[in-house]
Length: 191
Image 1: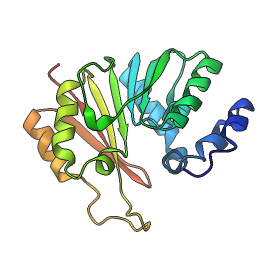
Image 2 (image 1 turned 30 degrees about the vertical axis):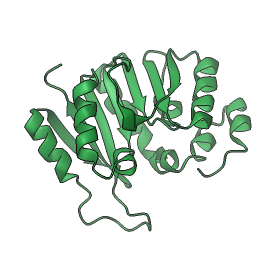
Image 3 (image 1 turned 45 degrees about the horizontal axis):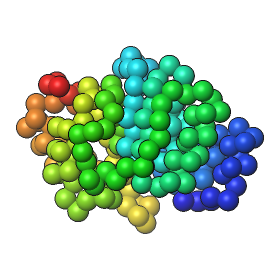
C-alpha cells in the first residue's frame, strides 16, 4: 500500500485516479484499465466476481454490471463499499480468504483474480484448479506479475503450470500482456 491516510478525502472529492495510485497493483495497472474495460465490455457480461479485488472495482465497475468484490483487507473493501454506494453500483463487498476456497461464492459471468495466486500459495496449481472447478463463472481473467520484486523483467513470465492445467481441463484461453502483468483470459467450456 502506498498511502492510506488520504484515501477517504480522495474518494470524497471523486479523485479516483489519485485514489487508485494509493494501491501498488492498481497504480501499476492504471494505464491498462481502459483496455481491460474494453475487454470486459466485449464479453457482454452482467456480473463480476473479483477475488483479491483491492481497488480494482473503482476502475472496472459500472452501473450495468453486478459487481461482487472480495478481499482479505477490510480497508480496501471499505473504500470499495463507499464507492459503490456513492456511484449506485449494484453489488456487494465481503471479506474472503482465497486460500480457503468454497463453493458458496456468488455466481458471476466473469471471475477476476489479479496478481494474487503466486502470492498466496507456494504451489498455486492445486488452488487454481480448485478455483476453476468450484467457481461457477464462464470466464476467468487471471493475471501474474511479469517483473520480480526488484523490478527486473522475468525471463519467463508465462505460468507453464497454468497452461498445462488449462489444457488438461480442456478450457480455452488466450494470453496478453501489459507492462507489468501477463493476463490469462479463460473460457470455461463446461459449467
